[in-house]
Length: 232
Length: 311
Image (cartoon, rainbow over all chains, first blue to last red; front, side, top):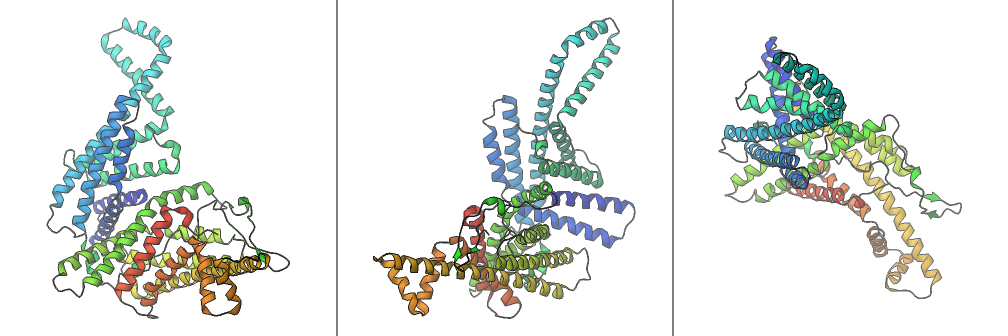
C-alpha cells in the first residue's frame, strides 16, 4: 500500500516539475493518468481500513495515560471516518453511485484526515514535552547555576538564552528518540496535504507531492525497521 | 477515472481473469515439511524429518526479503476477497443477462467487476518478486517430482507476472505501442502451464497417498482377522475396477484436506485459461463460478493456514 502511495506522490511531484520545465502535454497527461490509476487502486484496497482504525481506537481506550488515550482514540476515530468517506468516494469514482457530489465527499474526507493529523501532532508534542521535562529534571543541578547567573542579565537576553537552552533540549530529545522524530516529521509532512486540498494553506502541487513522498518513505522505513515505529 | 474500466471490452480485460495465487506452494519460511524416503525394499515410508532440513533460509538478504513479504502480505487477504467479488459479479451478470429489466443492475455489476479488476492489477505489481522467491525456495525441495513441477510452475508464474506488468503499463497508458493481444496470449499460456505443473504435482501426491493407503490397508488386513466396514471396501481393491479406485481416492483425500483443497483450486483456475486459449470454450457463468470457488478456497487457506498445502 505504502509503496504505491510513494509512487503516487512521486508522480505528482514529477508532473509538477516537468510542467514547470515545459514537458510535452502528452507525457503530462500520461503521468496524471498513472496517478489517478494509482489513487483509485489504493482506494479499492483501503476498503477495509475503517474497521482497522476502529479496532485501533478500541485498543487505545485501555491506555494508562489520559492524554495519550484521548489523542490516539480520537485520532483513530477520525481516521475511521476518513476511510469511510474515502470508500464512498471510491464507489462514486467507480460509477457504482451515479449522482454523487464527489467534491463534497472529498472535502469531508480531508477534513477528518486533518483532524486526525492534528491529534497525532498533539500527541507527539505531549510526548516531546514529557521527555524534555524528564531531561530537564535530570540536568537541574547544572541548570540552576546557569539560571542564577542569568537572572542578573537583561530580560531579553535571558529570554533568548532560555530559548536556546530549550531548543538544545528539544534537539537532544528528538535525536535520542528516533521513533518520535520520524513520527513528528511524518505527521508534519502529511499535514500539508489536507491543508492544500481544503484550501487553508495553498501551496503548489509539487510541494504536496514532495511532502506525500517524504511521509510515504518514512512510513515504509517504519515497516522495514519495526523498531522505528512509535509505540503508545 | 472509472471510465477506463468501462472502455475496455470484456475480452481485453480477460488477462486479469487469469488470476494466480501469490502464495501457491511457495509457502512461508519455516514451513514444516514431510518427506518421502525410499527404503531399500522400495516401500515408501513417511518419516518425520526434523524441521531444520526444510526451513532453509533464503540466501542473500533474509531480513529485507522477509520485510518485503510482510509488507505485501497485508494486501494478500484483501486481494483474495476482491477476486471473489469480481468473479461473483461475473457470475451474477451472466445469470441475469437473460432477464429483461435488469440492465441497470447488470451494468452496475460490470462496473464493479472492472473496478475490482483494475484495482487489483495495480497491487499485483510486486508479485514478480514473490514468484521468484517461491521459485528459489522450491528448488531446494527434497523430492524430485514436486521440485521439478513446482519450480517450473513458479518460473511460469514469474513470466506470467512479467507479461501482466507489461499489460498494466499499457492499460495505464504509460507506453502505448504494446501489442496487447500478443502479450495477453503469452500471459495466458504461462499461467496455463503453471497450473498444469501444479496439477501434475497434485496428481503425484494423490497417487502416492493412494498407494500408501492401499498398502496400509493391505497390511492391516493381513495382520488382523477382524475386518471392519472400511476394510471390507478396500479389500475389493485387489479385484480392480473403478469403484475401488474411487474409494481409495476418497480415503486418500479425506485424510489430507489441504491436498483436496489445492486440487480443487487448481482445477477451478484452469477453466479461465482453457476458455481463453480456445481449448475448451465455456460461458462466462462457468468461469465466474469456478473463479469464485477458487477464491473462496484461497480465502479459506488464508484464514486457516493449516489448510494450506505444504511441502
